[in-house]
Structures are given as C-alpha cells and as structure tokens.
Image 1 (cartoon, rainbow, N blue to C red):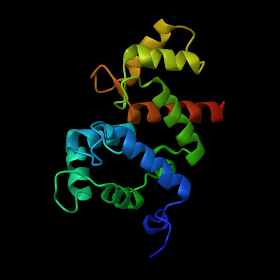
Image 2 (cartoon, one colour; image 1 turned 90 degrees about the vertical axis):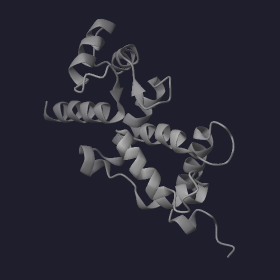
Image 3 (cartoon, rainbow, N blue to C red; image 1 turned 120 degrees about the vertical axis):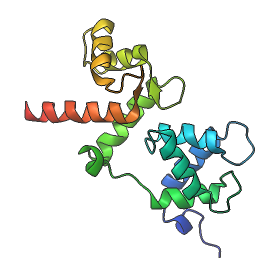
Image 4 (cartoon, rainbow, N blue to C red; image 1 turned 90 degrees about the horizontal axis):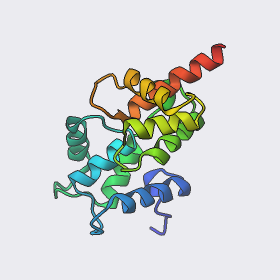
Length: 170
C-alpha cells in the first residue's frame, strides 16, 4: 500500500521504533520471533503481566496464527490494541508513569521486571526516599506485600504513586 508501517498499527513513528527495539531486545535467540519465555520477560518488564497465567493468556491472544511464536506483526497488532492507561491504573500522568518505568528499568539489572532487595534499596537511595541502604531494605520489606523476595514493577509503581500522592498533599 505504500503506507508507513507504523500507520497500519495506529502508532506514531516513535512508538513503532520503541516497540521494534523492545522486540529485538527481547528476541534473545535472534530468530526474528518471540517465544513464550521471551514474551514472559517482556510482559513483566512492560508491566503487562504479573503472573504466569496472565502471560499465558496474553500469549494466546497474541499468537493469532497459533504457531507457538510471535511475529513482529502479531506483537504490534496486540500492543496497539492493549495499551495501559497509567491514570486509571495508578493515578499517574503518562509522563510520571514513563519516568517511574525508566527509574525501575535502570536498576533492574536482570531485565526481568523484578528488583532484588539491594537493587530496590539503591534505587530508593538514589531517589532520596531513604537515607541509607538499611532504610531502603526496610522499605523493601514493607512493599514486598506478597513476600516473594523481589519487587515487581506493579508493586514499585503502586509505591511511587502513593509517594507522589503524599508529596502533593504535603
């Protein structure tokens, strides 16, 4: 059709480029497809899924040709129809949501959508939320509500949204 590829998915060029970069980054075996494991890491990293059941559901929805792998087109089609609304989810503006996501990602050394206690403590120390690493670890324990020893992006976004709300009221 001669149409720019991002237009067929209802995306801006910037969004398209970002999604392409994510697809390539998470295609760890460089085969041009994303398998269930790769989508799992990506879904957690983007805060689209918090459980294996969520990932399985997403993967089934995305894999329209039932090949067991996702093409870039399948991924773009699903993503263009399933964008999160940070205001509805966390009471955050898109800008604040993006900032918090970037903060989280900078400290997520395993790129698995999870922060260890020390990664979280370093992040909160760098944000000025805590005075030292021990205080960061203490804060970690209070936020790790499911007790799994890591903080997921959802837990971190919920925490940061609460902090922002407190700061706005002060």
